Structures are given as C-alpha cells and as structure tokens.
Image (tube, rainbow, N blue to C red; front, side, top):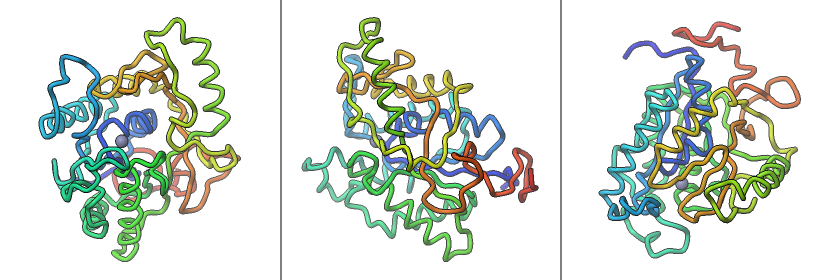
Amino acid sequence: MTELPARRLLLVHAHPDDESINNGATMARYAAEGTHVTLVTCTLGERGEVIPPELAHLTGAALGRYRQGELTAAMRALGVRDHRLLGGPGRYADSGMMGLPDNDDPACFWQADVEEAARRLLDVIREVRPQVLVTYDDDGGYGHPDHIQAHRVAMRAAELADEAGCGIAKIYWNRVPRSVAERSFARLQQDLPGLPFTKTATIDDVPGVVDDDRITTEIDGTAHSAAKADAMRAHATQITVSEPYFVLSNELAQPIFTTEYYELVRGERGSGVRESDLFAGLGLGIGGAGGGEAS
Ligand SMILES: [Zn+2]
C-alpha cells in the first residue's frame, strides 16, 4: 500500500453515528490537516430505533445495511476515507440497550470474545500504525454494552499492539467537561422555544461527562462545525439536527459540541494547561508522507 501520512489517528466506536456525535469535529479537523484518520466501527447498529416514519420499516439486517450507507455519507462529510467495520460488515451484531434479551444473542458484540475481536483490531493497527487511539472509558461513556465492549476491545488491542512492536503512543477517552455541559444545557433551555424540539435531555444523558480537572485535551473544531452537523445529519435514521442542537430517537434535545474534549489515559501529556492537539509532544509534522519530521 502507498505510504501513509506521518500522523495517524485511529478511532474505535460501537455504532454508526457515535463517531460523528463524539468526534465529528476532531475527525474533520485532522482529515483536513492531512492526518490519516481511521474509523473502526464495531457493529452496524441494527437494533437502533429509527426516527423517520418513512424509514420505520427498516429493522435488523436491512437497517444495518442502510446504516452502513449513512456511515459512508457521514465519512464523506468529514473527509475521512478510511472507515472499516470490525471483522467486516455484520460480523458483530448490535447488542441493544443493557438488560434487554438482545444482550444474550450469541451473534451480538456483547457476547463476542474480546481476545478474538481485539486481534481483528490489531490487524488494522498493524496496517495503519496509529500513534493516537480514541475510544470510550470503561463504562462505554454511558453503559451501553456495545460501547463497553468497544472500550475493552480497543484497550486490549492496544496491549497486543505493544507486544507486536507497533504500540500506540497516546490513548484518549471521549469526555465532556461538566462545566461545558452545564453551560450548554442552560443555553439550550433558553433556546428551546425557538427549536423544533419540545423537551431537553439532561447532563446525565450525555456520555463521558466528568469533572473539568480530568480533561487533558480540547480540540477546537469550530471551523469544522458544519461538517460535523452534516455528518450527524447523514445518520438520519438515528439523529435529527437543528444546529447547534440535535435529538436522538428519544426526542430529547442535546447540544452539539464543536469543541471536543478528551482525557489522556496513556502517553505523555503535551505542554500547556490543556493540550490542543492529540499528537502534542510526539514530534510529528502535519501532513506529508512517512516517518515523522519534527514540527
Ligand atoms: Zn452507540
């Protein structure tokens, strides 16, 4: 394969749409800067609830196929060309929300062998050799089985990558600082009368909210807010967008964050109160092929 750019970013997500909601601005920014951005999505989200009535007939495998198309459109909006499904399309089925009988389906991701799934991810890591990995915390951000499993698989794959000699320098978990969430929801309350939504979510509905002092890194994606919103819109079965807000199938309005926040859990933290670059401290120039000239 042709030589990849010096900077390579890998994101591991549970379902199509998670990447755009959590990291859309980050992905668009790094893709625009010439970083090689690789998205690995673990399931096709076949158990997601469909919002548009005209698409409500889509369930199971048909919904999975449709959502694969939505994911492709979202990646086009973000400028990301390398997106893959762990083990290929449909290898791991959506596990549904925690506590549902779906969790017991032997084909679902929650029932998958972590070691085997991590080895599939290791194949991608060997090929792409990312210096940075982004995924969820050990609660999957909000307790969804597929998000928890994506965390386990990503973290195990990182261990395997160390053993294989292609270790990942920095690992981040998706976060939202509590103060930012509080401010955004206060603004949402004020804006609600002018929105096509009637109810708001609460901070507890937002994955990955933590106290501000745990935030190590903030990626300003303001210049890419339109791309993020477009990517979220591409997931029309799951998301309705009215910038700068959106709803999922629960119809509860939430803010779209165009600055995205992270907690560095592995690797050396770059300088400053908060890093403003996921690659900070790695000495890798932006763009260009090959092995990392200092910037
Ligand atoms: Zn998800």
